[in-house]
Length: 607
Image: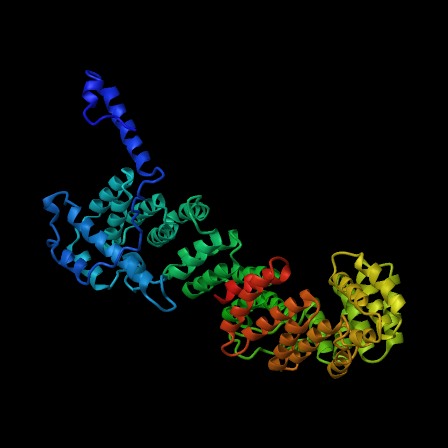
């Protein structure tokens, strides 16, 4: 049904244009409804597709048609022709970068500002940018006026075209980049806004604090599709620092947003531009080491050349170095450091140190770390000497730790009775200020080595109740291991653990006796792989990790083996990409827990 065509709206509503117009709208809506009613032919819907690239030379023709640079006396230049050129060039840059193949697809410099940042003088050397720069007006007020006018009008396409022109001109003025950042904030394009703010900071160091505040707001912009960490990674990758201040701003933001790889990279940029002093670098090393980024912390220490520091900083840096090497289980490096000083009287000069810097004697913590390294390398006599030196000082906590080290060294020397006496005396010492958990743990290890499993289990249960010590956490793992197998494989497994008083060959032979039918088999293989790594045989270790990841009946042990295999592959020549692929595969297989968090951190570090 419908209204007869002979009846017009004027005859229906004479003298009432408002009702007549309303009726026309209703009629149009009714006609549209009839078009999609059942039985009607379906309307053709145009298919949206990516707009094609401009024909070759199209932008060049428009660019060459621009007049020569206008003189300031001609007044306010009409921007229409320039905006047309910018629209063509901007689209050409965007689609051209997206269609380029290879590893840099979509990641290249897609604007004059990005191209200029990669040049020494800050100006883009691309042919189109050079021609456009020569033909644009020279007055910065023209650019700022046009940017502000278009931004206030919310004419986003033309505002972006004007921003392109401003970038191409390459004016080294902080106010211009402040206006560019304001334009990109309304789009929103946080990446280019961040580049503009960093360029402003580079040109005006007095505004650094305010710019850092703006950058913090930018990272948490509700209109952004990127997380703060993703945006920080992009800015760290895309902004080549020429000023210490810009690297400092990004480094501070990375720490505040827990993007530790970005903080590390920007700190390296700071150190390459200006010496920040040992205080700041050592504080960052300590922080990264505490967060588990030992490779980052070690690299910073190497770049600092810590052995050339004056005596107060040298002691702090050396302690951090030994702590990191201990976490990485790099016992040979610790022993090599111990050979630099005897710890008695005046120390020998360190090779390569100038200015009369002398190597100070080792402090209590360093003596404990060195003694542990000697014990792990199969030299319990040297470890016992370090332990006795610590025991004589009797200063908490290193006097306590030294007596524990003494008991361990006595066990390794085949003196279990003396070790038991040392632990018992330490447990009954009325001057002791430390908890009993570590003592109970090592008493449990002694009982395991002697085959007294019932006593060992009781001691491990009590030791695990104490908190705040690594031995208490390890006691929980021992309790878990004792539940997995109560048969003949149990004594062989515990003789192969790192806490066992036996040497590496004996430990490996004990681990080989744990059959695959035992629930302890995957964990025995993981310990065996660690022995391969300590012996300098990463290929054999990686083969063991691969076997466990494929055949382990324990899901957690399999994922742990895969993570360790990837971490081992990182250190092999050309193994970074293979390790990256394994970490990414782990994230797909495993959705929560410690292993994927480790994998996420390593993926960011490798990228």
